Picture 1 (tube, rainbow, N blue to C red):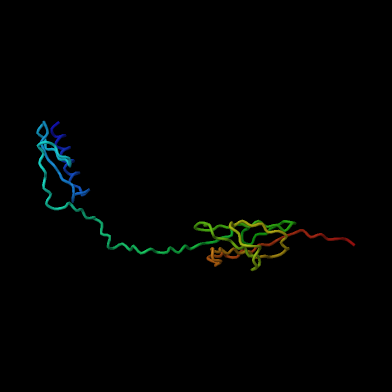
Picture 2 (cartoon, rainbow, N blue to C red):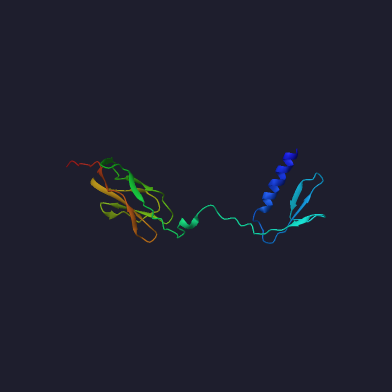
Amino acid sequence: MTHLKLFVVMVLAIVISLPIAATSTKIYVWRNADGVLVYSDSPKPGAEEVEVKEPNNMSSSIDTSILDINPKTIEEKYQVEITQPANNATIRDNTGSVYVSGRIKPIFKQGLKIQLKLDNQPYEKPQTHSMFVLRNIERGEHQLKMDLINDKGKIIASSEPITFYMHRASVIRAN
């Protein structure tokens, strides 16, 4: 049991020597009833004040002089991809409807908008999601492209253009 008490006293001595408030704290020492040295910051009758010759300053073991603390602006490289329809797909719809969806990487953040272009012309207004429904598209070959626009109206990324073919049934009238 004496080893345990000696260990407790040593741990207490180490904890007291840490630089918590070493410049103004007084340390006292005395022997308890079992004869074990006790260190404390509270005086007891018969305790002696321990003189601290040097302040207990600890320095970091990590060299921070090599760290660059200047803030860096992280340039996000966005990627835009049209996932539907597939390139060179044939769409068969008599109403001329086409469902278009895209994917934005790394993440579609607030303030960004997508402008869909159909045959190099903006299709409706930019919107805050990458899913579009095109209506009454004429028969034939068409190209789609998506532009990602930031909150200042600048295009920050564009998809590769894809081609799709719209097939609509035509009605032949007999005379």
